[in-house]
Length: 410
Image 1 (cartoon, rainbow, N blue to C red):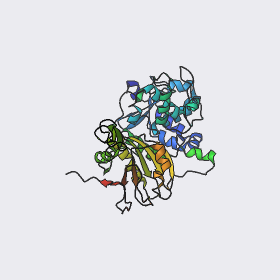
Image 2: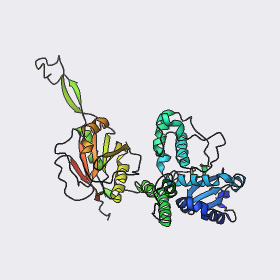
Image 3: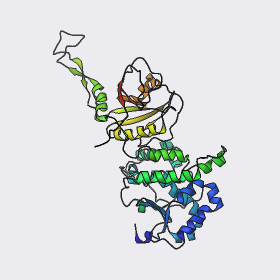
Image 4: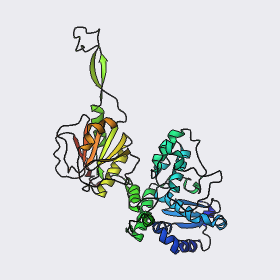
C-alpha cells in the first residue's frame, strides 16, 4: 500500500459514516450501507476516484477526495460499484487472477460490477464503458456470473484486444495474489452486514424489493457463493479411486488382425476383427448431478462444492441440479450459487436417454442423501453415488462412496 493510502484524511471516516447514515442512502441501500461501514476509508490521491483493497484482514476504501469534490454526482454510483467488486469475490478469489487473458477478465469484472447500478457512473478516460448489452449476440445475458462472461468474451476475442479503462482503479488490489484467507474474510464481512440489517426481505413489490438486494441478488445467495467452496473439505472421498472407475469403463473399439472377424472367421489376417480396448481419458467428462431437494441441507451442499473443487482439476465437470426434475445445467466454476429446486427427490430424471444423449458424459457422479426413487435397471454410463447420509440406499447398481468425516490427526 502506498504511503498516501496509509494516511487517512482528517474527518474522512466521519464523512463516510455521515453519508451512509443519511436517510436517502440508508433507506434505499441498507445492505450496501452495512458493507461500506466495514471498509476503512483512506485518502489516496494516486487513485482515480475510488478503489478498494484488502490488506491484513481489512478492506480499505481508497478515496481521491479532490475527484469527488469536483464530481460529487458520481459518488453514490461508485460506492455501489466498489461493494459489487467485494461481494462478488473479485478481490478475494484466485479464480479471477488465474486466467489466460487478464484484460478480458478485467472487462468481465467491470460488466458485473456495473450491472444493477442506476446511479450515475463516470465514463473511463479512454471512452465510454463497454456493457454486457453490447454482446447479446455472443450469448451475454443479464445476471450471468463474471466467469460465464469471461468465457464468452474470450471466445469473441481470444487475443484480448477488447478492453476498457475501468471506471474505478484496480491497481491497489492487483499488486499481489489474494491471501489464502481472503475469500473467508469477504464472507465474514458479508455475514456481518446481513446480521446487522436482518434477513427481512421487505414487501414483494419489485420497486421495494430491490432495496434488499446486493448486486441484483439476495445477500444470502451471495454468501453461499462466497462460502460454498472456501476452505478444505470436511469429509473424505477417494477421488483417485473414483475416477479410475470412469477411465476403466471408457472403452473404444479398435481393429485388430489378431482376432477373427465374426462375419468372416476363416479369413484371419485378411479381414480384421474388432476388439475393445481401454481408451485413455486424461480428464474424463463428468456429469455431476446434485440432489437439491429439501432433504439436502445447506451445509451438505457447501461440502459438495468443496469436493468439486478437488475434483475439477482431474475432470471436466458439468453440474446438473435436480430435485424431482432437472432444473439447471451449467459448467462448474468453483462454487454453487442460486441453487434451484428445493422440492422433493427423484433420482431418475438425470438418467433419461434425452439427458445422457445431450451431455454424452464419460460418467455420472450423483451427490445425494439417497432418499428418493431410482431406476431398477442401470444406465449405459458408469455411475458413482456419493451419499451424504448414513441411511440405507437400496439402488442395486452403481458404485458408492460416502462423505465420511476425516479421522482426526494424531
